[in-house]
Each structure stands twice: as C-alpha cells, then as structure tokens.
Length: 326
Ligand SMILES: Nc1ncnc2c1ncn2[C@@H]1O[C@H](COP(=O)(O)OP(=O)(O)OP(=O)(O)O)[C@@H](O)[C@H]1O
Image (cartoon, rainbow, N blue to C red; front, side, top):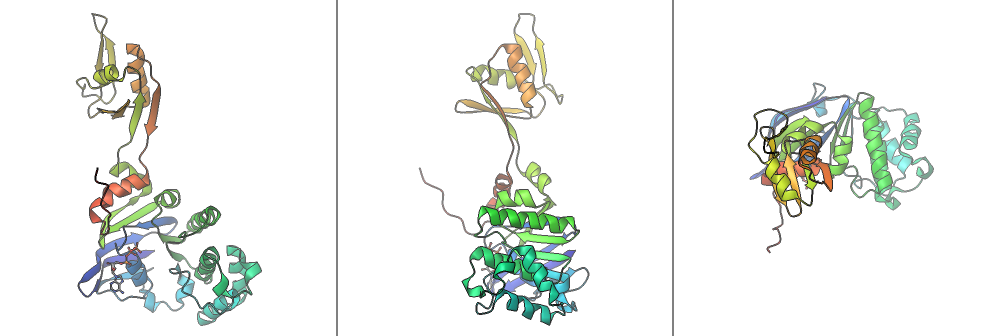
C-alpha cells in the first residue's frame, strides 16, 4: 500500500505537487491520470525517494522509501525505460541491480523469461527497440519480486501486442495481491486496465474513485433515437413529467396518447436524431409503439472514460491548443 499525506513539491515558484493525499490499495490496478504537467512523474519520483517532498510525506507499507532495507524487494518501478547504460547486456544490467539488493542471480533468468527477453539476454541494451527496453524495465522492476509496482507511462510507444502484454501483466500482478500504480495518457487503455483511478490537475487531487463510478458520475449516458417522425416522438417524450421513476403511457379518450415521462428525463434534437436522457431504450420503444411511430435507430450511448476525463480535467489542463475558429 502507498499512502501520500499532504504531499507537496515546489520547484522555485512552481508548485508541481500541492498537498496531495491519497492511498493506493493492494490487490488492484490504480490508474494515475492527469494532463501534461499535472505532477504525476514528480509524485512517482517522491514515492521512490528520488525527489524530496517540500512538505508532507509518502509511505510504502508504513515506511518512507529511503528507509526500506532492500528497496527493490519491496518496490519495483518503471520510470524511464531508456535511462539505462546502453553498453551493458540485458543480463549484466539486471545482475548489477540484483547484486546491489541482495537478490540471488538465479532470479535474473526468471524475470527475463517473464518478460520474453531470454533469447536476447546477451545483447547490448543500446540496440534495443523501445518495446524491448520497456520489457527490460519491467524485468528490472520485477527483480525483487516486490509487493508494490509503479509504472510511469508503461505502454508509451508500444505496438498493440506489447500493450496487451503489459495490460495482462498488470492485471495478473494485482490479482496476486500486489499494489499496482500506473500512470498513462491512454484513456481507452486505462479503462480496460485500472480498477481505481486517482486523477490530479495542477498538482491537486481532482478525483479518487473506482473506474466505473468515475465514468458514471462525470458523464451521462443517453439513448440515441432515429425516426422519420422524430419531431412527433420528441413532443411525446418531452411531455410534463409524472414525478415517477418510469414512463407512463395511457390512451386518452380522444384516441390520442398521454405520455408522462419520468422525472429528470430530457430530450434534445441533434440533426436527424434525438438524444434522450433519463429513459431506457425499452421505455422509448414502448412510447413509439403505442403512438405507431417507426423507429430506425435506438442505441444506448455510454460515456467513455476519455469523455469523463476530459469533462473533469477541462479546467486544470495547463497546456491546451485553441479550438478551430469557424
Ligand atoms: N526538476 C524540475 N525543475 C523544475 N520544474 C519541474 C521539475 N520537474 C517537474 N517540474 C515542473 O513540475 C510540474 C509537474 O511536472 P511533472 O513532470 O511531474 O508532470 P506530469 O504530470 O508527469 O506531466 P507529463 O504528463 O507531461 O509527463 C510541471 O510544471 C513541470 O514543469
């Protein structure tokens, strides 16, 4: 478990991390998200004792990193995969790390197998592709069989096969009960990998919640409805709400239809289709059937993590391009 308490880092006038408090629990993958310059790398560097907090603290299972007796056996990290001595072979690189942390040399073969680099163990790292370097960085992180793993942008520049491999590995490590803390800008990837999200902007905490709850809370799902009589349907669905949680449809005496939509529902017209919130696709279908209106499309559109994230961090993005001026 990683616990940050009022963690703060200033570089001169820049407040990179601002009174950040959060807990990264074991047994799940926790995604660490935020716009460029939000303070993710600085936070990770403080977790690993590479930067000293200006204020506050961060503990790994109760101890600051610098007080761990065998750090690699407690925490493994992939920060910058290319920041290695290019003249060494993969095996020698891992051997150096193992020797400094009282890790038996026999573990090197195991981690090389784990990351699929056994065949190139004797090759110099300088000639490795980005994907191979990422795998080597993960082998180094796994060397001490640590309970806590930190990955900073682990899928950056990887091909789809490499991305799938890292996703599967992270999920497996969390299922083994380890603490997995991973930063990424790839929202679709995080949606598939992370159980929990910590989102920061300008060094401050914006959200700390389960991935599903984060998406549900930040952005509404809606039903997209296509019909040749969409204006009529919109009029029926926009009638005075009943105050109930479900739609009520009743034939009136004059053979017209009385529809009472549920409280809080809304209908918007978007070009040739309607966007309906607060009603299910089935309810909309019932209303249309009762009114004899044909439907050409009824699609439940669920928000993506990317949409929820953009909505939440819009005000805290430091570097944004101006939109096209039409
Ligand atoms: N060594 C440093 N000296 C001065 N300022 C720094 C230093 N390291 C980081 N910063 C500043 O601190 C802020 C946070 O940077 P950081 O790299 O932690 O953000 P990040 O969320 O990891 O960004 P990115 O997603 O772009 O990698 C930025 O404004 C950055 O310019």
